[in-house]
Each structure stands twice: as structure tokens, then as C-alpha cells.
Amino acid sequence: MSALPAGFPRDAVLEAALAAADVARSVVLPFFRRGVMADDKADASPVTIADRTAERAIRAVLSERLPGFGIMGEEFGLEGGESPYRWVIDPIDGTRAFLTGRPTFGTLIALLHNDVPVLGIIDQPVTGECWIGLRGEATRFLSTLPGTPRTRACADVRQAELSCTAPEILDAPHRPGFHALAAAARRTSWGGDCYAYGLLALGQIDIIAECTMKIWDWAALVPVVQGAGGSMTDWAGQPLRADGDGTVLALGDAGLLPHVSGLLVPGAHAG
Image 1: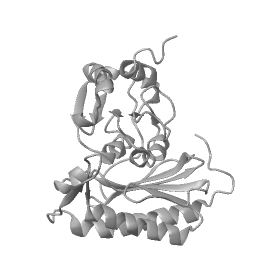
Image 2: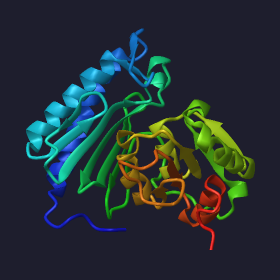
Image 3: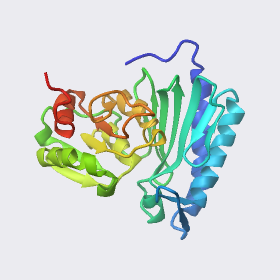
């Protein structure tokens, strides 16, 4: 695992990110199961007053704590893009789950250095679970619920638990690959959004394959999964990029990568 950048203000960054997650939790919880209405965005995904209010609160905390850093959020775009450090935030990842009263949504807070995720937080306000990933360090899990932040060994795809948020996020070009992987895996479960990646980091899920993902959907997940012993790539096994094809592949056992990627993208690992 690569180390943090030289001169990285580790403690200040971690304190700011956790403070932002605390504020987001206090904003989101009063809206949960309260009949909040949603608007449809241009991509047909829903957004609520809870999303917008939480993002504003997160931005306020981060900009006050570390004013020189850029901030990109799902709802309000990019500020301060000239900095090599950029926060990437998703105030409610899994708005559909939030709207239907399911506690599988989460707040995602990532910090990128030169476009590489170096910190990631998955915070679930209802269950009180929080995953903290820092590049080069073991993932931490803060919760009163049981769980050890370590992925499990799974040498055979036929024994793997596969997960994906929903069939509709699989666009037409990627469906054959996903169906091939699902046919090879032991079982496929649906639902979870960012919460599924937290479960993978706890050794409960082995594979997550999704597409149509934006940078705010995956940036915070990378340090969490990697710090727990797993891997995060695109379906072809390449590092995730903001300008990538939107596919995301999380593996609890990185040794599965050639086989899984070969099923998702035939020929990706040929030769």
C-alpha cells in the first residue's frame, strides 16, 4: 500500500473529515422516515432537501477547517479546483434507500491528492457505523455493532458473494459481463449502495461490480476497501479515474481480479 504524500496534514485532515461526517449525520437524521419529497435531477436520480442541506453543511465545515483545499460535491459542483488537494463528497449516497426508509445509504467523504484518493469515510447515520480509510493505513471501523475491518479470503469465484446496488444501473454494454459473473458466483444480492462496500471491508461480501458510477460514488470507497485488504479497480482491472468508463469492481480477495475481470470484460487479461 502506498504511503500518504510527504507533508500530508494527516491529523488535521482526519479531524476535518470526521467533523464533517458528524455534522452531516445531525442534518440527515431528522429527515429520515419523515416523508421527505424528492426532485428528479437531469439524470433521473432523486435529490432531496436532506441531500442539499447536508452537502452545504459538509462544505462549510471542510472549507473552514482547511480553506486551501478544493471541494467537489454531487449537488453543488466544484470550488477551488486549482488545489492539488480536493475533497469529493456525496451527502447521501443511496437517496432511493433514504427515501424508502432503508438504512443502507451513507455519507461519503473523500480527499484526493493529485486525483488519487488518500482518505475515505463511509458514515451510516442510522446504524452509527463509520468506516475510515487512510492511504497506507489499516481501515478503522467505529461502531457498537460487531465487525472487523478486514476482507476475507476467497480464492474461488464459485464461492463468492456478489453484490450490486440495482439491475438498472447496469447499462446495456455491461450487462453481458455482469450476467457472466453472476452465473459464475455462488450468489448475487441486490441493494446496498455504499453500505455494501463497507460490508465487503468487513468480510461479509466478496465482489461488488457496478457501472454508471461517478467519482463521488467511488472516491471515498477506495481507501476503505484497500485499507481492509481488498482492491478497487474498473472492470478491466485498471485504476479508477474521474474520466473512466464508470465501471467499478471491488474485491475482498485481490487474487480474484484476473478471473473476475476476465468474465466482466472478455479478453481484458488475455495473454
